[in-house]
Length: 251
Image (tube, rainbow, N blue to C red; front, side, top):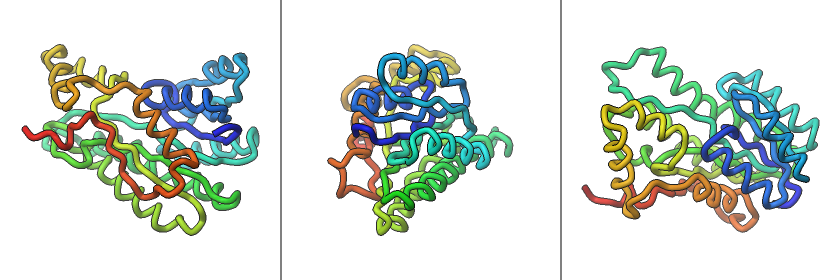
């Protein structure tokens, strides 16, 4: 990954932040993207001898994403990898959910993936190809309670990934999806905190895995790095489930 240019969305926290740290260690030049201000995080990386650019962007807005990619190209001249981790989660039964709430989830998780992958492909096809990693979820494959909209958005991402891989393989663009299970991130912590019994909810998430614990963000970053690297040169259209065994565990 040395000197490759990597765009990481959702870079301010959780899995995105862990991916930034892993790519920097491997010598990549990283564009940190988030709705939050990530300029200071990029400055810290630069001060430590790394190469980074922080850009604020709304992944659900095409103009914002286009401007972000142009800033990346202006600084680093090319895009080799997109690791797209910007996303939101909402727990609500469908009959209790408003259309606006549904749209918010789909706009960020599904439409945002469309916008970001579209922009990446437009740049990669002019520079010999690249690797795109989208973010699904183990919830794209199982029916979990009280989280239907999020699960549907992630199922859409999984299949969009497969279609993109089919359409753009001839342009040397690989597209794969990482599907995390319950990972100890601010998103999961926030979801657990809203339950009636947060301690029991966290224990339930841990017990849903075969390994009996939550995953760590760096464990997902390991898979992302692999898929981005030349070691995964014959892998495209895959949905790589990294869930501690949730999807193979019987009730």
